Image (cartoon, rainbow, N blue to C red; front, side):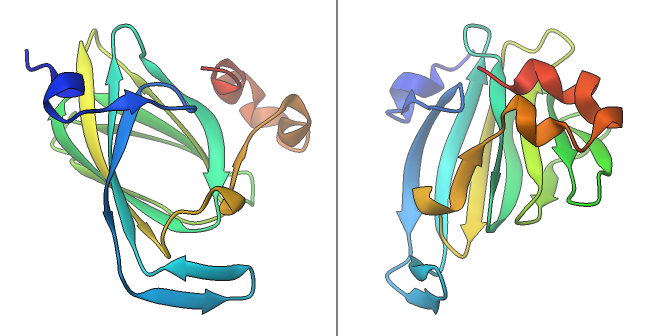
Length: 154
């Protein structure tokens, strides 16, 4: 098993797991919430020691590509309350789009020792566009509470 943390110089991520930004576009977009790079990209790694990513949402669309390992299951919640589950690495799935404004969380499944994902964010990531979920955020979605509560903390 490859040591992706060392090989890619990954650091602990506030969401859980490890990450490193690998690309920031030199082009920027003027948005009502401020200028953002046109696109950014990171490596994101879950491991046995860090198997879960906290429930959060971003204003931007995020494309996820499984690079190695898995399966990694993503649990998503749309603004309309629709709950989704996608396993990257299972049944040939290697790609997932999470639209801006949707909650998402991730975790290793089926005994996977690690899962390395490349993420592309457009417009580019800015911490001002990111928020972690709280119990209060789940109150409006009682059908999703059981599925999402385990992801409120890493």
